[in-house]
Image (cartoon, rainbow, N blue to C red; front, side, top):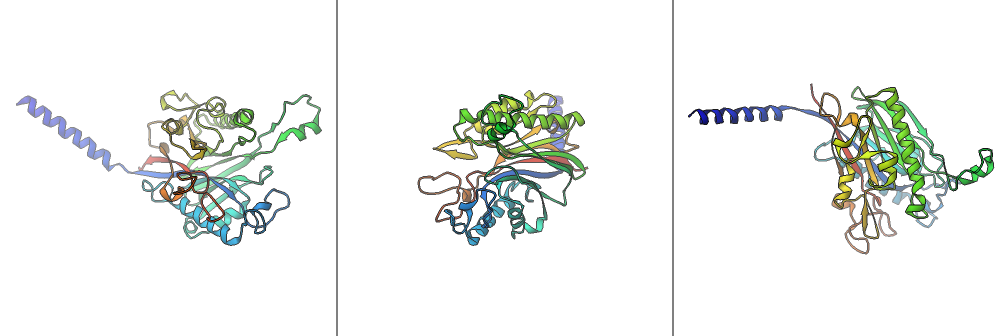
Length: 356
């Protein structure tokens, strides 16, 4: 009888603990990144290479097509993170946008306008004129400082420090890294938005450029952590490399396992997805995870009294996927006969903290 009574007591204690856990409530915010692929307006800018994205250009980029693209992107952005979080992302990092104007048109779309997104954007030195930016819901996040940090890389090694003219000729002009610091519901958060150099010329030949981007990213994170050892840092973007490449694993120092993340280290939840064959972009039937969101060690602790990383995902709903033809199964992008979405799937993470 004592054994039965003891077992019943344990059962009810466990049930009580479970019920207590179920009563806990959390604040949740979605953090997303989306390479929106060539979000150009229809106006020809003589200072950048946008001629094809005009009504008379090779893409026949008319106002009708432009606004259809905006409508498509707004639908995606309004749904990222559902159903766990019915509210659209609090933060959306963007890549391949032409200028601030296209973002202003985007956040005025019916599916986004009531969320009152703010915009942080700088023009980059990229020859095509494509930039990175951060959209944020102003009722939740208050930016304090933001800056664009240039990536200085060269086609060939520098021979002489005084060879100024030759250095300028050798420079590869690519996207800046955007650093934003502010307060999310009163808690300081640092966000870096990236679009690292492409694989033009081949993966191996161009790898040093992305390794340099990873090193710059690490330098930015180090500078934040020197000011505040407990700085909460999120770095996101299209890295043009997978989670296993040197730019991410070595230069940035990302870890796939939370238990391997040391103090001041970075955790990459997307490496496990890559190992399981998931992807954000496809090329010649090979999937890879170029789009990633990494978080600092300070965001993977078990104390939910402040914002912490919960989980991550790739937003690849069926309407974002090509359902026929040569590229069946690929992300549904723009074509002559159809205005699609992007050649990338968006990615996202959740930040949560217990309601007090």
